[in-house]
Length: 167
Length: 194
Figure 1: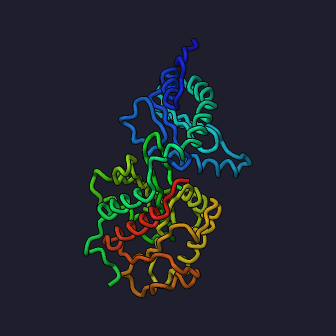
Figure 2: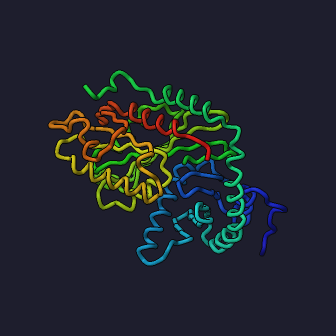
Figure 3: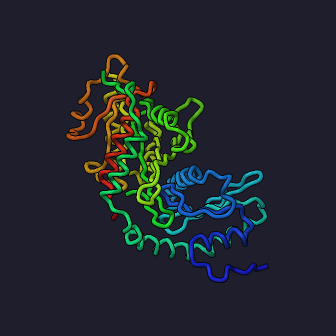
């Protein structure tokens, strides 16, 4: 049965939420290929999304090297099957990946279908977000940012007296 | 270039601890993780072999606080130092904003340090990064060993002119936070919105 889509999904979160709902997944995350979580929806409270993003990005990059060895440019989908939970990872454009965590393995077809269906919209939204990034970040004053950040570094990365290793 | 997200309101910088095998990269990260209070750090991942050699990478995030409405974060990574993990090292350097090169001060490891530094520069170039204008801090670790390398010998071998240098005994925590401070400041000083 085809479930209805959101009335008018506009944001990355809307599309991810729709996917989670229709495929009955636990959570969906969008991450950069550098391993940073861009967006997450669903049941994310029990997941360490920062660590998950770093690991999956590394895993995906390693798989790209494997693909090269066997004569492929890259593998666009990775599937990890567990006892209770499974992970479907798909490449979104060239710079991002979507991670879908789900429980009922019989829904793999639906997960794959939904992931494929929203992929072009996510690419479009990410591109537009990238283009407007500089404008949106205009609220940052770089000299002030540097000054505050350097103060935080001094305050938090504390160097004690016992630190000196040169003597 | 850091990950700057005006919607999520976060700026994330990536620091990679690079260096030859057994030079003390993971030891640096373990000390930093122990030294920081809980509110600033996330869980640490250590992906190693049964012999405690790093297999893929170690990682943990640091959140320094909010600057101009943006959450300022550093993600700290190590690379596997063993020579045959070349592909992993290249992967982990992707998106790096700065590097701490952890050199082993043991006198007989000069060649390993120099070779690994050259490999690092090659890896950076493969990501279209010019090593000469990239924030790299050279940390002479294991300053308690004997005989040890003189400070300056690695720079001379590699023809490095103005690289920031620190000294450390990471296993005792000496010089570790200082190195982190130096590399993160080098990164912030170069920060711009592009």
